[in-house]
Length: 453
Image (tube, rainbow, N blue to C red; front, side):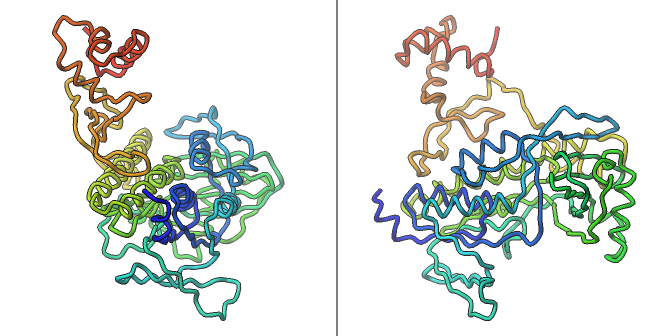
């Protein structure tokens, strides 16, 4: 693969959040010319992230975006009548995070255009993207061309003609309150018609969000919506610290928070990443993490589509399987959390306790389910077909463990004599030293790849 080949393909990423940024950084590492078109969020937003999400952002290559993150702050959860205040999270200002991502992209050599995508037209040569910038409202739209398009504009990304799986239609109503400066903190609480998430920023700004079922909430018209939300907030014990010595702004931002899976997340010269590929219920608290999960896989998929189009079907299979797998995993996390709230049986709770299916989130590995299959994997920045080991709880397969291919391990175990010790078998069949064979055997028992007697 020659670097000059990469220069032929011009890739444009629409959207400069964590998913779009991570994809752009990955493509730059592979030698591609990348342009990202992004625009600041239309409203202020604060999100809570875990240490796991923070590590994911670091692994994606973000540095300046994480330079001024606040320390972890207390998070209280009130659910099913019980309150837990043992957890913490980092409250991040999304506008500041996105600005930092832009700086990281520029430092990596990505061309960053601050503007609004007005129109995207596809043609035989690729794409023509019309971009309006805020610098001069009267100026003509800028025309950007691309050979490959990455759609990373979140849930609202256009997707006409693409099949989508949607969960229960959900809306989140966000309101700002302003109070005295305070220690950052956050809280979540369930109530009869939905659930609330609340955060207090150090400057005294409060972010109070209520989430409802669209079909059954019976929300009042816009003129009465603020009073309706505030009446609910004042009934929630967890909200008291956030309302204390604070006043509402009088503005509500409505955001769809319906879980959405794009059944076709990749084509020959386009791919959808992050929430544009699949968006989960915000209850799971894994929004940024799942967005990064798809974005970190995307550069190898794009590289394969551009450099080895004969493997296009394999690359698409790889990506769609992982998008589907992640979506159902996070959807089941949300389902189980909704099911843990047992006090109400109205439509909001009933529908969410049983969606997307009844499959368990975690399955105990069945040693009899181990199979050696040829499936797509990432290898040296490309998607290739390799022998992997699949199980009932790992349908996408495991290729390596600490650099050791697992298919030969399973094949050796399947061919061993009934009375042969597994460790001795691995030493002899694979030429492993005793220490490595002993450690591998322990792992096989611990993960139920070998049945205990």
